[in-house]
Length: 303
Image 1 (cartoon, rainbow, N blue to C red):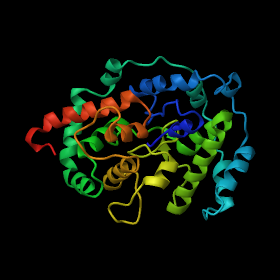
Image 2 (image 1 turned 60 degrees about the vertical axis):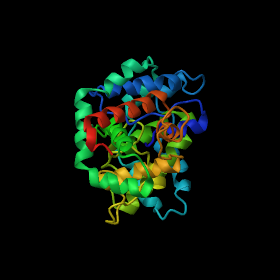
Image 3 (image 1 turned 90 degrees about the vertical axis):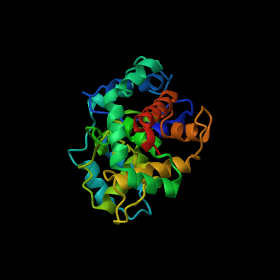
């Protein structure tokens, strides 16, 4: 989810893939993130040599963000304070990661990052622990519970790995350092500040990926505003509470054409909805393979 540069980069060039939820640098999924950067980093003219250093200052970013907040109810003073906060700063490693190409992984190597006995066991237990909520989400949205289980497993190891970058600084880095993505990143900053203002959240308090995705589902701020739901009825659309997270993922998939059914082949509604979440055939394949393996582990208990 998310949705990451992601899905918004596709607005610049539909041929470019989206990024999945980045993990902390020490995690093996980090190398998968690098592989997904290759086509973007090698796109002629998208990133210049100059983009290795920030090109826009905070005032320039503010000048883009503030008009985007018109009509949202977010005070300009709140936005300025968040952006001008010394904690909001360009993160050099993000500039390097988004500038440097990496080798693409063939599927057989890609799957090894996720399809392991330990992950299948964790996914199986996650289903058992959240069976009731998954059933309620299925009743409302029609989403296969094991697709949801597998997706959040791929994204954040079932909530165990949601990222280590401050979301505002990650988005500021992209807005300041990459001209081709600046308008997109500034819009995500505006969306993020709206979330923080309306939810009484400290803009410096949320950690996520180096693309600015956050939460157990790794939504970008714009995805949160468009698709997150308050499923448990507590008055908040929580990104770290499973009822809301699982329902939000299901809502996202449904909004992108998901229809339940046995056909999960390439081009099917299931495949296309997962591809919308992350523009990668490998990503869709590994979710569906994990689903099959968890289903086999559950045996008669499988939904």
